[in-house]
Image 1: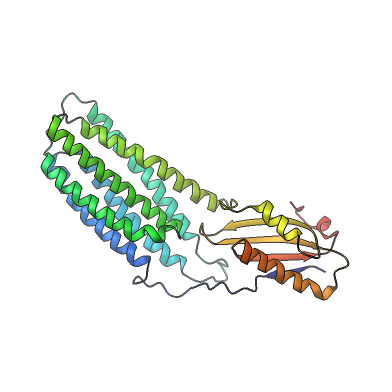
Image 2: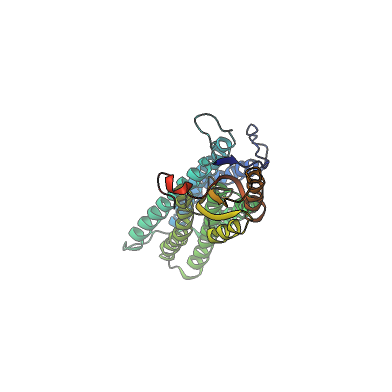
Length: 314
């Protein structure tokens, strides 16, 4: 007899209608508003002062605003409940949003590098008004620090918010770099430092974007999430009374945080038929309470059944 059951645990999913007044949506919206204001200030300031670093940071700020608003949209869609066409719901939309944000950061870095290298290689360096450049960069830094503070907590719970948080952190680093550039130009007169700082900003962006993109791809490719020890899970399930073999264990995530799993347990032949439901409950409790798996599908089967499965069990 084969028994396939879904978890009987209540996971407390909240599929209520999206409310932009709730955290983290509210914080994302506030952060988007702040970055948009700083973008306008940096755009005007960059044009007036002649600072490429300020214009580079302004370009990143406008994409940040779009990225933050995209993250809000991702949260809204992800909270929609499951239906007959999307039986898992729309939680993976958060990962897609984060992936787009990460790829956007790569494009920003490439544009900054190209502009900085072209300007750095030019014979003449434009005159830069360091006072306005410095004032606007300080305003940008303060704004980014506030936005980062708003998103820091939620970034630990959602890869989508982490993508938005990455944008804000890079902006903060960009503002610091612009401040350093303004001070250096004011005291040394070496305007080429502006291009050097722009290159540093771009190089600072790339590895962080790469990590985010990698994490998103791992989720989309249904890799075993980081920190999950499948060998330990298999060993713990094998130690349950009445289990003689464990196979076809799969652990994945829809949104980069919540874990899902499916597994086949082979029961011993001496286990009374009625006890397989007790075994199922114990397996579910182990997966949920010990290994933090939010939802699991467990199939209990007799010895020899695996030989008839197609495709062959792994």
